[in-house]
Image (cartoon, rainbow, N blue to C red; front, side, top):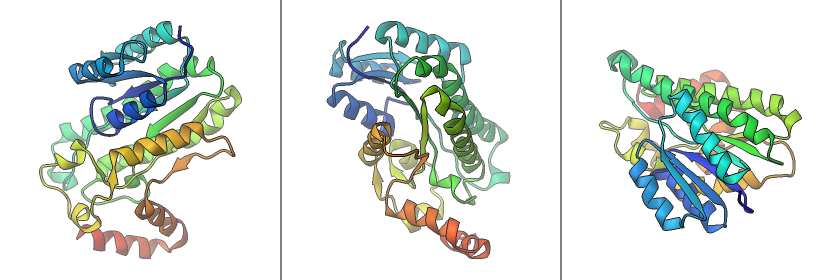
Length: 260
């Protein structure tokens, strides 16, 4: 058992997950590092020190492995202050031209992986005072976006799941939130083989550290129930436009940005 707060992070090997792990470790938290790239997580664990971290290889689509990892994390920490469902993948392109296997992989990792994490973490979050579940969504959940059809669909689903659980789990003292950033300078975005036009037209304004800082802000938020967090000015403007402007205007602006 430990005497410091603890966070469990999926997709911790690189990008947003790694930046979040580094921030929480710097603030004295115990950090659980989980990713398919287990060796990269082990390197981080050694960097933080065994008193500050645990690392394992984890496939978030494997329900039994997810449950076992959380059980081992709990056995070591005795608490789960924050569950950060961050692991995700990105495939873009015209819907009909993308192989069906890629569509299914997006659903398996980005949606089922989040559901698996939430379901497995619930009993531990319930036993930890003022705990939080934080899910990684995307600005793709604000408007349906060409070239991001299935990716966006998974993020719409994560947004809906977050809204439902934020109400369901309030009775257990668990806060449930999500983050909906636009493009972030991470390997996931940079490694897209043929970036959609919207990436070039909107630019990549956010860094992994920006998102990590917002994860921290969300986990520390206590003023009033707040479900959705929109990192960056562009994302906030997009969210407000979607709420305030007629659907026809939002549709036209989406076509203009994406080139469809």
